[in-house]
Image 1: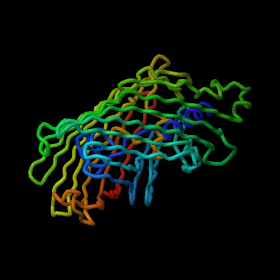
Image 2 (image 1 turned 45 degrees about the horizontal axis):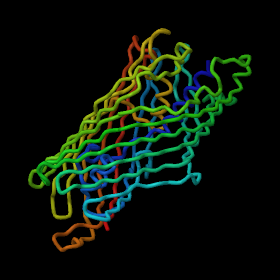
Image 3 (image 1 turned 30 degrees about the vertical axis):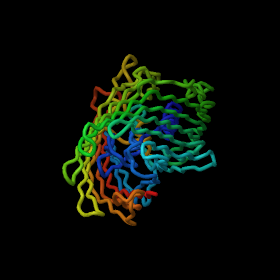
Image 4 (image 1 turned 120 degrees about the horizontal axis):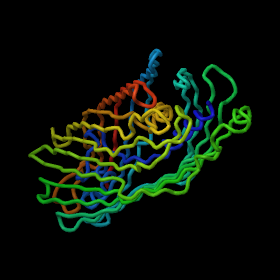
Length: 429
């Protein structure tokens, strides 16, 4: 039985490490489909044609304090809490944008396969097997085999723009799963995952500077997983634990029209109001291994529609107040019991939450902060002024709550809370 558990856990970690997520600004609710800034360009490549200067930007979290409570029926709740300083995670993505002309923006970033890695150590992760709660420890290292993003946007006149984005990631994994109370490893895992995504961005400003619209279509996403599991439990079980050690290997899979992001920006005097809707489509034919029924079952997946709201208000010439809120629904449902049912949120997905590579959903977040400008400079033609250095900092609170009742595949209750201090730096030149 443990063989099945560790295989699923390992695959979940690998998928989480390779998951691609667009970086945005949490201080404005991660909105920005029609925003002519660095964070707007990361969401919609068409915004690159509307950005006023070449720039380089980076955002991370100065402090990140979080807690996760897990309770299974019949067992006491288990709590995990901690604080990280300078938390540079999968959402911390840089951007360099070059403006060879006022209408054209080209940028992105690329990190070659130079052996950069991220070590993960988590203890006492609760899982339920045969109605008994067990704790496992995870030690893993994700190695970056290549990571990059390319964006290009062109603005036609003052009202219309088009852009294209290409994102690529390749991640390697080495992991060991052991019982929390000691003993020999339950499994060792090696593998890799590759993700490629292509997006088309559009921007239309019927009233430039007052009313602006943005649209991003995920044209196609391609992924491939390779996984090798080695466990002494396989030999102890007579060499047949029910899963091929290389069962996680797959041919490249392609999902066309994977997402749509639509947004609006309304400017009223010294304020800008932002609203985005993010639709994400999933492959409902995906199959996952159920540690409850010990067989492959169709996953209980659903398309989602998320809401992102943001606002900025000019306080002084160099200071802008930022506000934002976001709601993100859950794509993976509770599943259903029985071999003819579906597999839902469970051990594999909980591991992703514990390691910080995938958020618990559904969640809502709210935040606010301030953006300050330094190093004032004149535009090239002397028609105005701008600040070469922009620094923003603020406070964001996120809460996620998920409950699975007796009709779900693996009943349980999960509560996640996070308070973070994001900081962003942008330099224009």
